[in-house]
Structures are given as C-alpha cells and as structure tokens.
Amino acid sequence: MNLPLHERIRQDFETRILSGALGPGARLPTEQALMAHYDCARMTVNKALSALATAGLVDRRKKAGTFVARPRVHAMAMEIPDLGAQVTERGQTYRFDLSLRRQMHATSARLAWKVDGTVPLLELEGIHFADGAPFALEHRFVNVAAVPEILEADFAGSSPGTWLLEHVPWTEADAHIAAIGASVAEARSLSMEPGAPCLCVERKTWRGSEPITYVRQLFVAGAYELTARFGPGARVSGASA
Image (cartoon, rainbow, N blue to C red):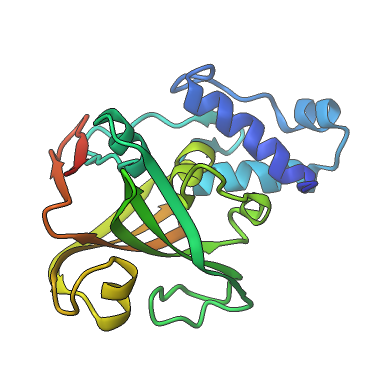
C-alpha cells in the first residue's frame, strides 16, 4: 500500500523515536528543513508533526521548534502480552487460525467499541492454539484509519495481536478481566461444553487520542494465566498451560 507522504514522514520519526535514535529532548529538523528533505508542502509536514504530537511522542513549542517528548515520571505502564511468543517460550507449538471472521465495516457503530465520530473498522475473529489444542478465542476490531497497512496483512504464522505489537506503537490502554461461562458458539469454537468457565480479557488501545484496537479474548480455564505488575517499568506476563 502506498501511504500518504505525511504518514510516511510520521512513521519515519516514530521509528527513530521509539528505537532511541532520537532521545527525549532531541530537537527535530525545522519545518523548512523537512519540506526540503521530503520535497513537500508545509501542510504535509504539519500534518505529520501534529500526528506525532497527538501520539505523545513530541512536544511542539511555539517559536522554539519540535522536540522528542520526555517520559512522564508518574506514568503507569503495562506491557501487552504476545500470546504466540509466550506459547513458543514454553516449548509449545503455536498457531492462530483466522477462519471465523474477517470483515470491513464502514462505520464504528459497533456495541463492542464506542468511539467518537465515524471510523472504518476491520473485524477479525479467530482461535489461538497451543500444541494443536484451542486455548483462546479472539474477537478484534482495528481502526483502519489509524492502521491502513493492516488491510494487506495476511497473518500467516502470526496473530493480529502480534502484527499490531510489531507495527503499531500504543501510548494508552485499558483492560477489563472477568470470569464467565462460554456461550454455545464460543464453546463450539473452543471444543468445550457450553457454560464451561473461561477467563475473559477485553482491552482497548490508543495512540494519543487515536483509537487503535479493541480486542476480546476468551481463554479456556486452566489454559492461561496472566500476571501483571503495575508501576514505572511494569511488566505483564502470561503463560498457557
């Protein structure tokens, strides 16, 4: 997919910032320098810088320039687990089957994810396997306006979650965890009895004020555990049984 120039400029600097090539406090080139480098109009550069600012990656200071944002001292952090990597680390064979649903929606009018305005959503539904046994059912919506490249992803050998973690940085997330019984359809997908206990994890992520994805994962009881430590430098870990 040929991305708009402002999106390519944003990605260029986003990659440099997240990799550490541009550290906190570093000054980005002036708008005039960026216009000359990318051979584009000021509006294109401004759109890219505004997107970086919205994501919390840079601070734009009037008459001073644009600088890489410094980490917020009191920010709480939690890593989002990569289920495929966790299963593999346990010495098991991982597989994700995206055969249940892959569908585009022209608007965000979905009960699962309430966002302001109208955004195009890609709906994905599939099953995570460990050593050939299903251990999680995943239902996900992705904001295509924020992540247009996902339309070309085929998820061969990896899940949508893994793809997003590798391609799209997130700055904010919220999660809801509950113990529930599997519905008839869910039980069929997970090869279990209806009403069997499951761990349900729902999560939404944003990049700045821009919504990225909503996901609902239903884990077979006893097949997965989630451990998290909250605070600066916090980590989250998970394991499949």
